[in-house]
Structure formats: C-alpha cells, structure tokens
Image (cartoon, rainbow, N blue to C red):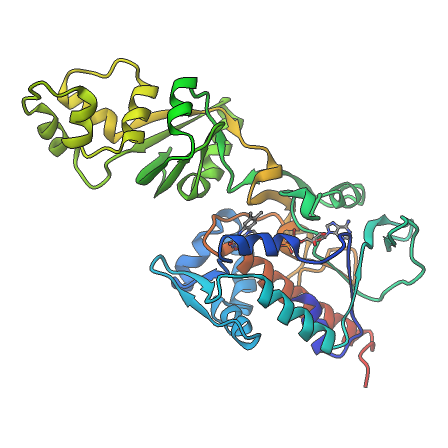
Length: 393
Ligand SMILES: Cc1cc2nc3c(=O)[nH]c(=O)nc-3n(C[C@H](O)[C@H](O)[C@H](O)COP(=O)(O)OP(=O)(O)OC[C@H]3O[C@@H](n4cnc5c(N)ncnc54)[C@H](O)[C@@H]3O)c2cc1C
C-alpha cells in the first residue's frame, strides 16, 4: 500500500522481499476467507486497538474501512459485510485481490525484487539490502518504508530479525509476544481422546473484567478459536503476571443461574447425571465432558451445579508458540515515529504494519491497521521526497 502511494506521487519505487514471492501471510489469511475489515461504526471500531487506539486513530481516519472496501472493489473484488459485521471479499479469497494489486503496481512501474533482504544499517545509518547470495546490493535509495511484519508464522517471511538492527540503533522495540493465539491446557488423556476438535459454541468467556462471547475449539494441546483469540491479550498478561490464567466459561449464557438451578432440581428418575445435563441444562456432550474434566466429582446440589455451569474455571498454562499465532503483540513503540510514521532522528525512514507496537483481535482489525499504516507511511514518504525535490516530471 505504501508502494502504491509512493508510485502515485510519481516516485520510482522498488519493493524488496526476502521471500521468493510477496504477501505470503496475506495469502494464508485468505484461507480463512480474508476478513479484510469490519463494518461497525468507526468509534466502536477504534476501541478494538486497546492501548494503541489513540496512536492509530488519525491513521485509520486517513484510510478508513470504507476506503479499504473501495480499494478492493476497484481491484475487481467487491466486498460484503457478514451478519457479524465482518467484511470479506465476495470471493472469500486473497489470491485474486493480490494478483490484481500486483498487476496494478506493475502498471505503475513498481519493481518487485524477491529474495532480497533488509540486513541491518551501515555505519551511516543507511539500510543495507542484500541479494539472494547475501551480498549487499550497490543501490541506495532516498526514502525507505519498512513493512517487515511482526513475529508470527516466521516461515512465511516475517521472522522479526529486523528487531535487533532497530534496537541496536537505540529505538524502543518491545519484545514480540503471540496475539490471537491458542493456550495450553493440561487435558487428561480421557478428555482429549474424546473431544479434540470439538467446538463449544457461543459460550461467554471472561478473564478479569474482560468478557466476550464466541466459540472455543478444544485442541489436543489446549484451547483455540475466536472466543479465545478475542481474550488473548488479557489472558497472556495474566500468565506473565501470575504464572497462569483463569478463564471463566459460561456454558449456557442465555439461561440464568436460577433457571438452570430449577431445571436441574427436577426429579431425575433413573437418568444419569450426564443425561440430565444434556437434556435439562441443554449442554452439548463436549460441554458435559468439560464440566467433568474441570471438576471430577460434580456437586449433587442443583444450585452449585448451575453455578459451575455458569462460571466454569479453566486454568490456561501458557500461550501457544508465536510460530502459530495469527498475529503478534510488541514491536516498534509509537513514540519512535512521527505522525507520518517516519522514524525520529532518521529522516527518510518510515515504518508500517505489524512492525509497530499495536495489537487487535481478529475481525478485520489487523489488515485494516496494516493497510492504513502503509497508506499513511507511503503518503508521508512521498511528501518527504517532494520536499527533497525528488519527484519526476
Ligand atoms: C493464519 C492467519 C490468518 C489471518 N487472517 C486474517 C484475517 O482474516 N484478517 C486480518 O485482518 N488479519 C489476518 N491475519 C493477520 C494479517 O495477515 C497480518 O496482520 C498482516 O499480514 C501483517 O501485515 P504486514 O505487512 O505488517 O506483515 P507481513 O504480512 O508479515 O509481511 C511482512 C513482509 O516482510 C518480509 N520481510 C520480513 N523481514 C524481511 C527482511 N529482513 N528483508 C526483506 N523482507 C522481509 C516478509 O517476507 C513479508 O513478505 C491473519 C494471519 C494469519 C497468520
């Protein structure tokens, strides 16, 4: 997106990527349907960025969700908003959009050089770019926009090796941690052999004052899924602070504890407790399994049992490795860049995307912030270049 804005301003642009082809993580995001952005009102949208909302507000105001949708539409990939408000291309694919965008960039004269890496800064603070043999290339450039990504899925290209070079120059780079990730749980063999791969649908989850409603997927090693990803920041922080996180699960969020208690206190006859939990409390087999996994001996008292169903505590031991996280928290602190995302004390060097220290849940907020920061950095870089008298024509 930065390349598009620079080329639009009339600059000669080259994109370097260490991989053999660009945008591999974007293509992977396409496997889940490519949730480009979200259609909720902008003031609500901005709250999703938590502590970074203030820094990102002017950036997303400059390139809004509607502008991102228009961009996709112009490239032949019209979008729609699903019932949750999430926005997807109608094709649910990333590859046609990427192909159309690369064609557009090519048409604008943007050169793409694959298997070329940013390898650090020289003694004058100028970025060093290397070719596929690891040798520095001789060309230098007047303006650089870094879009080197965060630290999740390193095999797709963003291996976060840039952090060392940036830290060495004294910039504040916060350690990368997994975001929108699963968490490990010490499941019993019995539970996991029966329920791995099963979803707990539409449960309410809370961690401290943070709450969400969504799906939890039972994985061999722990829990995953949209509901867990949405709480991954407070859960991760609780683990750092306390050594583990306590997730509270309301297995029947639409039924009150009193109502559940009444249903559970009806005479059971010859029914097993599992059957009662399924029929009277409306729990799925995996939800019953989870109750028993967390508390081997379920209480006989209907009120106590209802309370457990409404607030089942699950101990999460650690986040799943960053290699499999959807995104990462951490990166270059916003106080190191100006409003145009130019690095302080480094005129002509700009930064965008997941390199910057912000995080957000899934829902389209990640790509929106990446596109918007790319747009703003590209425009500001073009403005800077104009000041140097670098524009052609
Ligand atoms: C499985 C999965 C599904 C996702 N689904 C969605 C979704 O539906 N919606 C959403 O909003 N977000 C989604 N995301 C997140 C989204 O894809 C990322 O937030 C986004 O791609 C980050 O963009 P970026 O340009 O900052 O970094 P990246 O996409 O990681 O790109 C960084 C680029 O820099 C290159 N690079 C890195 N280091 C160097 C170097 N030293 N030299 C040269 N090149 C280098 C890499 O090769 C890479 O091409 C998903 C992520 C994953 C993993």
